[in-house]
Amino acid sequence: MNQTTAPDDVAADESPAKAGRSADRTDMVGKALGLLVLLGDEPRGASAAEISRRAQLPFSTTYRLLGSLTRDGFVDYEPDGRRYHLGLRIFQLGQRVSNHHGFAGTALPVLRRVTEQTGEATILSVRDGHHHLTVNKVDGPQMFRVTSDPGHLGSLSTTAVGKALVAFAEDAEREKLLAELPLEPLTEKSITDRDAFRAEIELVRRRGFAVMDEENEAGMRAVAVPLLNSQGHAFASLATAVPVFRLSLEGLEAHVPLLQEAAAELAARLPQR
Image 1 (tube, rainbow, N blue to C red):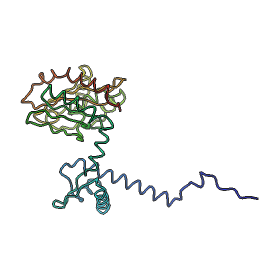
Image 2: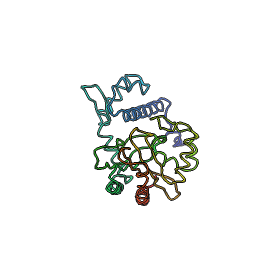
Image 3: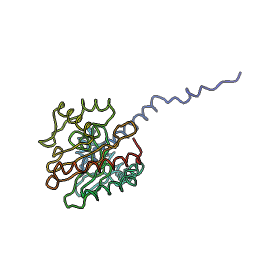
Image 4: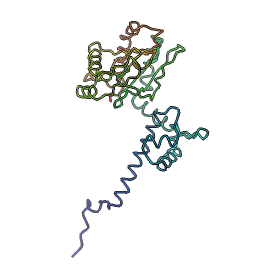
């Protein structure tokens, strides 16, 4: 009588040892990605010891992972200061993501047009968890420059772009953010009371735009509008930012119709996440 082979699903089962090795590899990938995230928060770079401490990983593990990431171009090593920085490979991948979502080719001409009319910086942001992520920016012709460059992660509660993203999030998500969002006091004008923040978000919803008046950075103010999908929820936000000495809050709010027109154009042209 001929022998039958084992069922495919049994033959495909991994041994416990092999499964353990696979889990270890996956865990190491997660740790390596975690180091990249930490380096993203260190524009001046960090030493292996600092990264190890922040990541809560053994120094030997951190050093080995940094070596692999450096070899593949994801991290750069500065011998003089013995510091690590994000590498050009990250920038290359980020540009591909930006192009895929239309943030470069599609959005940039619209942002440039807004800046030509306002003479001030125009910023496009999306939500990334409890932060906003700057995906594109066009600086104004003035000498005073806005520091929120593409790739910057900022507060949702203290910025105009962040408030617009919260105010026009899906209902359940908005309620979750209102209950859980850290209300960090970045300046003495930052809203840190949860009831006051809820009232601010309701005001944004009624008016259709959000303002920031030195709540995120002393000497700066901004106005932002949401980019809405077909359900009326924000998938991005568009802002004009200025130093306080150059434009009053009322003068800044006068740019809202221009921003809303640009936001409607971008919402029709950009992929909606």
